[in-house]
Length: 317
Image (tube, rainbow, N blue to C red):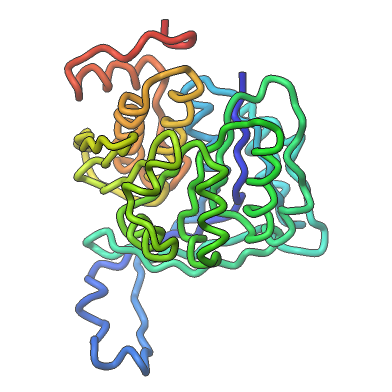
């Protein structure tokens, strides 16, 4: 069985600033902001939400199906997907555009400033959701605006349960559009900032959003995540990372593990625990697609972190 991953494929340029953004941005001068940050280290990585999620799912033995677009400079990414054994049957190359690119600066407190050029991602809506046998779940991750709208409708029409993960794309949508996403989705996953924005934009409380889906997950970094199911709310403790190197892609690693576990039939609470395990693995490694973790290692980490065995499933049995 497979999961459909709708989202971006991008190249990430990741830099580190030794200071704190807060020390260089004066609150009373934001109307005339003009700052520069010296970044002694710089690294280029494969990224994009779809690529990152598919990467971690593949580590766990999943078979992600990526629905995305690349630009004329995307040959390296095509080779990357081939090398990982991730099908690019539904990855389209837009010849007259560049691949989406993110430029990320991280300060010493792990705050991040990101600029993003969408490039070929703007044409992601030209790739429809495939009517492919074997697809069990899907995810709408940050992508082109029209693609997110159309792919959500297409998944619903195909009867494919999906996770709505608006991420940094959330501000692109108005109240009725966000309410429609929630109506169509089986699960909603946001971080705490996005959760507050989603609630404000929808005009609904988190509890009301949770009441319309199978589950709502609000991630809180080192504090773990809050899981809403029906009228219940549960805090799932984080697994402490062996070390903190780079937060880039931690959310995608969490979502990949969550999706893998849901596809395998795990309860949502346990799926979130596995998400925390993979998030901890990712944060200890630089870049969004450079961590390693086999399924056996992930299950061992699960037992160690939570003191209980992972659920039986068709994969973990």
